[in-house]
Image (tube, rainbow, N blue to C red; front, side):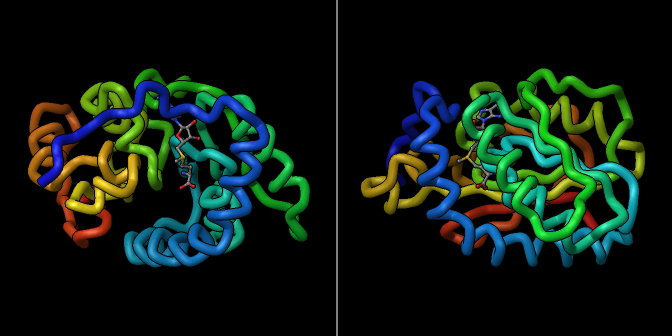
Length: 201
Ligand SMILES: C[S@@+](CC[C@H](N)C(=O)[O-])C[C@H]1O[C@@H](n2cnc3c(N)ncnc32)[C@H](O)[C@@H]1O
């Protein structure tokens, strides 16, 4: 296993980089959103509030709202330029959607306790400086019966070729972080290229 190498700064700072990322990930996120939607539906989440932290250019938040139209989705990110692209994506949507974007830190979320039915995130965990603080925040902002589904890269030998995979956690490391956090009832699924952290059945 290659040694983990964290990012110095995991926040989009350049508008052109955020725009390019948006174009390059559109199809992948559309595909990925299917698994978020089916898990949410399996859990019976059809309305209420959903948080997508590290929303980036907002593609997952927008897809969730299209496919579960009665939920109110909030996309949270620390990057002004990513949020600018996210708001443009939302404006360009062909249907009115219940989505908004807010600037804020996943380690110190600007939301009240017990505000959300569901917290989701994709491709962001490996960029968070203190994941334990972030897991604690998920526990705080979720309703008592709330659910979470976080998907991210999984570190492997491919980390020699990708700085994102190199910054990612192994399943064992993620379980260790989770066990030191306040987040309850989690399970970690290992898919070799990526991993999921989700509420237990
Ligand atoms: C690789 S992008 C993923 C974007 C999107 N979720 C996706 O799957 O395409 C990671 C995002 O996390 C954001 N980010 C990094 N650290 C953050 C933090 N502490 N709080 C909120 N957002 C953060 C970055 O600005 C960036 O937009």
